[in-house]
Length: 172
Image (tube, rainbow, N blue to C red; front, side):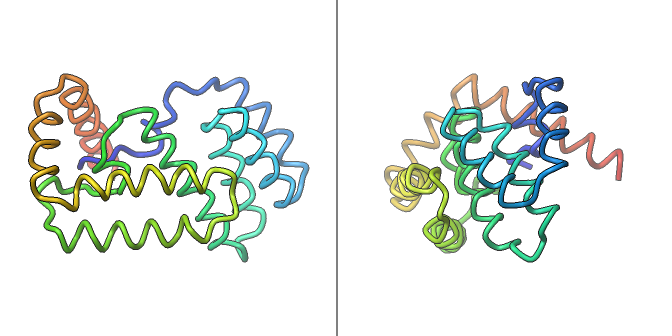
């Protein structure tokens, strides 16, 4: 598995701050949680924005589609800040995925983010488009893959992703 779970992406979170935030959000409605998520994103606190939008969803699952678009935009930013990997940004788990699979995933993610009213959407879409620009062109992708596969950051990432996958399998 190439994409790590949210636990990996947010493993450096301040648990006391999270506990405090969730305590405050528990007393509020979904609109407040959504607004708080946007405020936190603007402050570049992506982890807390992710948890805040999750709270909004839990409070009002009727708005699942809207809150999912916020979540996707925030996660694109989190992935970009954490692993700097075009495949991960597009949500591509198979590094040997063909053009059609990458195109399908790009279109799905780009459409979701385009419909997102979040302050994170425009910059998330730029990241998604940049990933598409590289991975959709065979020569650029080949050069990117060579660079990516030889980087120590990627090797550490794959190792961490594998350990999370094994832990998930063992706990299943």
